[in-house]
Image (cartoon, rainbow, N blue to C red; front, side, top):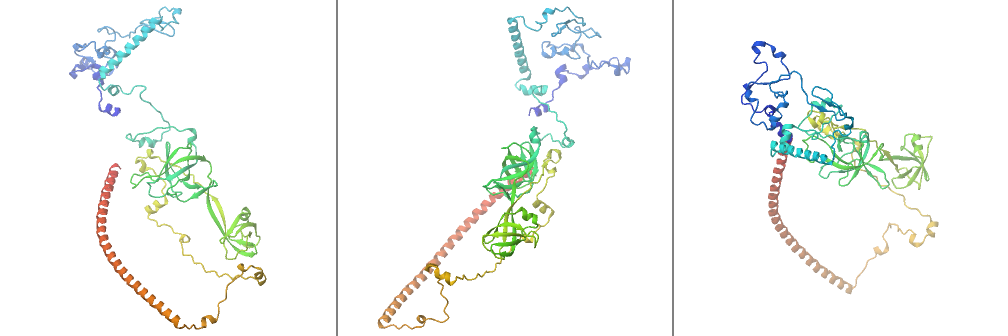
Length: 563
């Protein structure tokens, strides 16, 4: 603000030095009066004198004691020779003394007598009294200078002084920066403040940075792995490709395709090395016309590493070709005998849960076939798979944000775009892999053979373990064929029970009818109340959405004005 105030109020230095001149005709050039006689002698005039007073009455003013009159002889128009009429060509000087050597010089440069004994005491007070008087004189001089500044500059004080004098030494700092690109000077914007910082030698190197990362809760979408992000770390802003992972209980960094919704994960990217516990900020795009919250995620640096330890789960699938009791020949899992030799001793498993182990590669058959042993005999229809972990490579991509080298700022900086944005901009349809489409699973119902137990084994089993499945009869039994005849007493009881059941059924039917009538009336009453409530809800909802629409439109107008 002081700079702007000083720029608006430009002081007239000529008026401060020479005083107020009522008429500009009082000041003429030195050779103006001799112009008719000398002709073109202006080119030979002395450069040491600027102006000459035509009116001698203006040479002295009434205020001889003022500060301006005291310093007038220090300028070109003052009296340098001591007398107003002397026009000496030689310059005159006062006596002065060299404090280091003790030699004294006269007005014309002659050397005066020098006493060697005074060399040690030159420039020093002779005793304590002289020293205290010297200090008191300095204090009085300082107080007088402060009082004079206050009287001159008034209430504004330092601000007014800076406006007239400019920034003195010690107030400002001048920084020289070498090897600045030419684009920076061409696209420099003085309105935008420039922050200057420094980097340690360690921070100039690049490597893999592992951070604890979390998606910002105000950001609408989750972040996808290998989509470029703009990271803001310390003094730097750069674009890199992150790889997300999570740490298992055994310390393994497992690959993640997306960031979790409401929990932390770990991210590894290529960039400049920074000290641990440094805060980071991630933004997807820097342009100002993005709706919603721009900050995508936040985090903190954990460690620096030269290589990544992120692994990705991979299932290798194979099918059995031959089965010999607990041994089977598996094919389709590997492509060569070298791969089989690398996985010797690895644990495998069938879909039904039978565990096994890889043994040796087969010399015959399809390349990559091997012999495996299992806990139990498997079937030809079983699928065998092996769970493995594959290292994930982090791409070494580093693109610093050079917005200060572009005339358009951030809009002129060219950054890598995610694949989704390229699809939208180029109107390219998304590639669909037919194998990735979910299809209905059709599984045939398997028929298992009945359990056959030899008679010798069955006879030795206890009764609780023996099979008790009765075979289905082809003909009806005697119990189902025989007819049951009731006597008179049983008929009388049966008739009474039928009458009681009939009465009960009639009462139940009447109760159901009454209940249905009451339910119908109740539903009609509830429907009338629901209609009234629905009308009230619609009115409140319409009013709420209308207010939200006005607020959103005001925000959009404010954002467009700011952009």
